[in-house]
Image 1 (cartoon, rainbow, N blue to C red):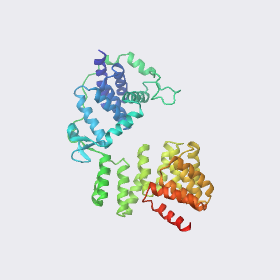
Image 2: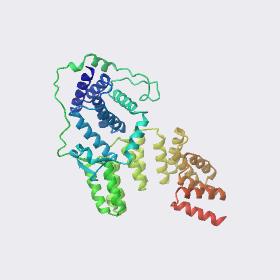
Image 3: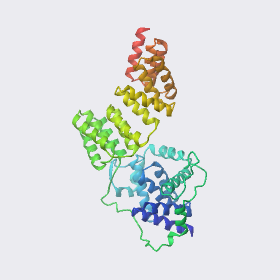
Image 4: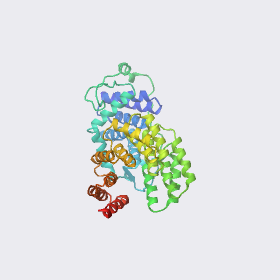
Length: 421
């Protein structure tokens, strides 16, 4: 009896989600998982809600678990198609044809896809983060419960999603269940996903993979065509713009490069993952003024984060804004005393100020955090060399080259030290 009611509640949840009634979708889906903890469909709807909100990997893990528990028809086909699209988009499945743009109908054929080398490790790592698949399911239900005001999040635990404590129903949700919403007279019209006919799906992962392959072959014109098409299909994403900036930098098209930088800075998003992608891409292109502007936005959205402050300090240092760099790097270290990036860049700032004693202390700390980072060992070698500690400088320069034999600055420093000893 409970299993039948759970299935009915799950189908109500799918119907509500299709109609844009997100709160009702969440409540019906959560209730379905309460009525039948092993039921797959309610769990799949809870996962779909999180996926539409954030695309978080937790939704993928739980969708996979829901599928493994078994799903009724006709929902099974739709959930399987959705899961394949999700895994393919993340680069965890590859299509036999190798395309980065596929019709949605192609995902109905499971035999057309194979798991990539990253698949098992990606699944295992993200499942292990929650302790188990069941732990991931509990975390997702609690997250959606809190977001939809169904369950009261305990305020006295360090990590509520992992807490063993029971979460209480919120009054509104409890009252809603007591009224037995399944007895409502609304129609029970089945809701199905839109027909895949005519729908095309693009994978950011596989598109970037294709572009990089063309870059390696020197086929920059073809790579640019694909990247421009990618931008047309994904106008709100940073990744195609960053790829295009990289390509236009290589063909020395400064006008288009400047246009794309302005687009990156004017793209309206509050997604920190998108902004982080822009931060990394702009840094690799050494466009530090734009990178610092992106970091300012990140700091506004997530103030007081050591990683953001350390990154902004590093960008300021590249721009020779030493006061701004010092302020951000010190603040990052106050929040996180062993932040490696802040230690390294503050050490570099002290080298520029010729305060080698302070620089060496900071870089020795950074070496503990990043023992296998060639650049840290190189900076430390430079600092020791400036202090006339030739033997120690030699050891650090050699260590840098052992970690990265192609690190030209370390090789040049080593040769310079050897000429002096």
